[in-house]
Length: 357
Image 1 (cartoon, rainbow, N blue to C red):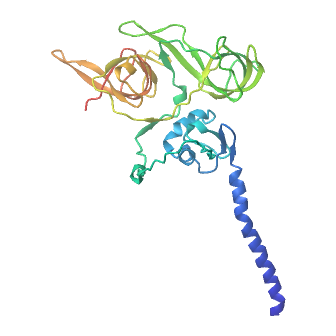
Image 2 (cartoon, rainbow, N blue to C red):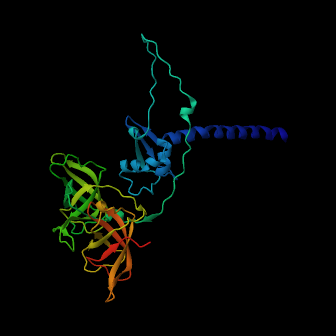
Image 3 (cartoon, rainbow, N blue to C red):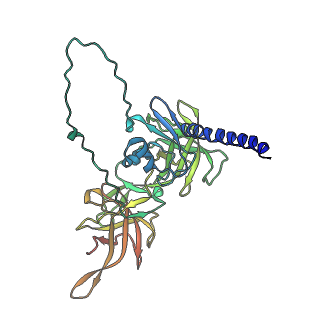
C-alpha cells in the first residue's frame, strides 16, 4: 500500500514545484507589459490603486510634480480619478534622467581628481505633504469668465453629422481650423466649446467696460482629420454643459482641479456684483456671478467674502452681512464667484467686503 502511494506523491510535488517556479516569471512579464519605452519617454498603463501622486513619486522621485504630469495627459479630465487601462505618457525632460555610460578616452593631460566630502551629500528627510482644506466644485470646467483681451479662437463648429438642432454628449460634429492659427487639429486633442456675448459687460456703478463674457458650453475631442489645408476635422462631444450650437468656437481644453484650495481673504476688499452668469435680475444661493475685483486687487481662487447691505438707522447706518461668496476664477479686473449663502436676493450692484474677524 505504501509503495503504491509514494510515486503519486512525488509526481504531485513536482507539479506544484513547477507551477510555483513559473509564477515570478509571469508576474515580471505582466509588469513589463505595463511600461512601453520610446525615445522621448514612456507609456504606462494604469493599474488598480494607482494615483498621479504615487506615479509621480515612482517615476520622477517627487510626488509634487503631479500637476505637470496631469497637464501633459489631456485625456485625464479629473486628476483625482484615473482608471485601470488608461495610458499615461511620461516625458524624459519632466524628470526622468538617463545616465549614459562614459567611455574612457586617452587624454594628453592628466585628469584632476576632486575629492568630495561625505557631508556635502547629507540626506534631507522628505516632509510628508500637508493636506490643506479645499472646496470641492465638480462643475469647475463649465465656469465662464469676463476678459478684456480677446481670446483667440482655434476653430468653429460648422456642421452636425445628423443635422441636429440640439447638440449634446456623444454627437459627432465637424469643425474647421481658424485662419492664422498654427496649432493643428489633431486626433485626441480636446477643445473647450465657448460662445461670447454680443455686448461688452460694463461696471454697474461706473459704466466702464469690464470686458467680454465667455460662456463655456462643453468639451469635444478631435477624432479624425478629413482635410489638412484648410484643416477640417470630425469631433465627438465628450461633455455638454449648456446648449451647443453651430458656429460655437473652440479653444484648447485646459483642465481645472475640482478641489479648490481654500485661502485667507485679502484685507480691506470692498466691491460690487457685476451680474450673474445668466444675467438674471435677481439671483440667490448656488448662482455663478461676476464681481468687479480681480487679480490686481489681491483676489484669489479659494477666498470667501461677505455679502452685505447698508441699513439706514436715520442718525447712522450700518453694514449688515447676509450672505457669502466663494471665488472660483480670477481675471485682471474681475472674478467669477459662487454664491454659497444668501438670506435674501442678490442683484447687480449688491456689495461685498472682506469678512469681519
